[in-house]
Length: 277
Ligand code: GLU
Image 1 (tube, rainbow, N blue to C red):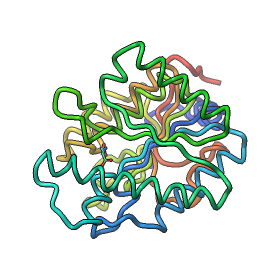
Image 2: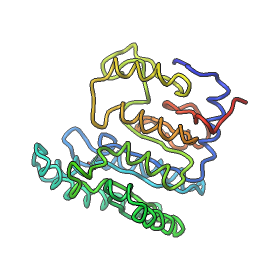
Image 3: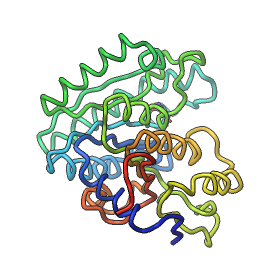
Image 4: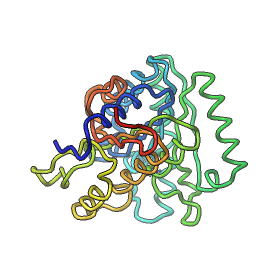
């Protein structure tokens, strides 16, 4: 495992993350669907189990969940070739997704709420204030807000683009203390771990950011929703003094490990929020 930073600042960042009161958890489509693009009940239940680990510690959790287009694709076996098809599929998948989240959180007697957003809602101060107020009220009631982009109406001009940016904007906008991006790779690596056995996990990103960016641009070809946007989202957040993790959704007790400051995934050390011990 590579360490690009001094150990003390990593430890301090992990403890800051463990103490977070309000956490944004972002789950990608691969963390929720199977190879045939059907919603995967086991994966979804595991995510909810992990979130419950935070809720039972009296933390507030806001979930940013992708998967609507993926789940819609599996459900009605239509391709998502055109923008219109993807938009339509998202409407099929989104209701299915919420149905499953409702069932899964019911196991813990927790209630959920759906919030579908566009770029306008993030940019317009009045709309954003309304959004914040709604989220605050839901959190006061102990309801778990579940956010996704409103893909059905999000044409090019008003598209946020991907949920990595949406979750970073939400983290800063609702004064969360931690962003956790759950994905199908275990963090940021020195190569593409899917096809490079020598790729090593980078334990922490902070002052080594430029070096990490260089590695990513050399080793990844994925664009939309790939590691690049996850890293940008996590970096944005850490530049605002908030710690962020990129971690593997299948890692056992992944959120519990974060809540107990155990080493997991890649942590983005807050640039102005943590000093060395
Ligand atoms: N909003 C899209 C969906 O739910 C996903 C966007 C993303 O994964 O970044 O399918």
